[in-house]
Length: 283
Ligand code: AMP
Ligand code: MN
Ligand code: MN
Ligand code: MN
Image (cartoon, rainbow, N blue to C red; front, side, top):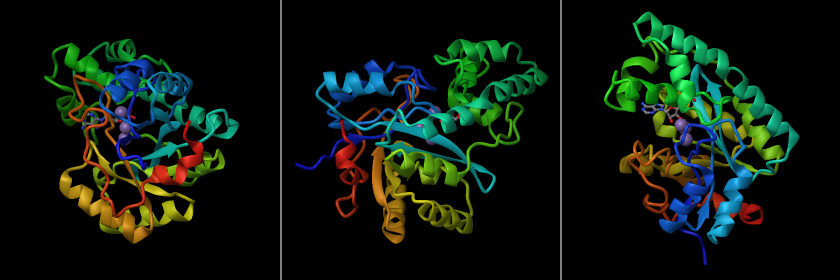
């Protein structure tokens, strides 16, 4: 029987989610997820806990990560699935990718202080389950808590995106490095939520072409970050570039995420699910 309810994208307290790997596994299992992956940003410290929790619920598991990449001046996310989480090269690559986050957080706080929001560094850190992984999401939660904004989307809109006082440009991993860390550790690389980027058609074509050339395999078609129309668009892109398709909620928190684990539509039947290519990596 082939798997339909795979959810291969979500975040725990190890990055910018609010639930533990164990609570996420329980929630995924309760929602009928058959195959699950925890894909924390730039960090695989939750993998063993996630795999054990999945096993305790009788749910299949693939190792996962979401790597921050800079491509054509924008941040692109590459999801890695089914890699060996003890591989030294991916561990070092992710550690290097995380490395700049501390200084970046200091600069974000300095930008916010200039518009009268003080104590944001300490405030964000308080929300970060992992002090090595302070993300804009943690700043957003602090600004909601302190009453500056109603919700995290308002924080991003007013403070944390390009041109706004708490925005700090950052150089992440290169596309080639991220894809190779994943594939050389035995996994497959997937372009996360392609509709979220603001590329010109030429830049997007370059992203998909270079991704394939580096050994990338899949693209997220059905994700919590896409509209139904975008499922259709990126199903077509998957066919055009000969990519397998992935499905994932990108769940972060019961209070913030509009898409729960395991509740998205299934992949269009005409596409090759990326998990069909990872059968020997499923735990
Ligand atoms: P960072 O890796 O620190 O740049 O933070 C990126 C994270 O911020 C993403 O993974 C999302 O979880 C979150 N994020 C980005 N844009 C938005 C937005 N417009 N509204 C809410 N959360 C966002
Ligand atoms: Mn996130
Ligand atoms: Mn992402
Ligand atoms: Mn994500």
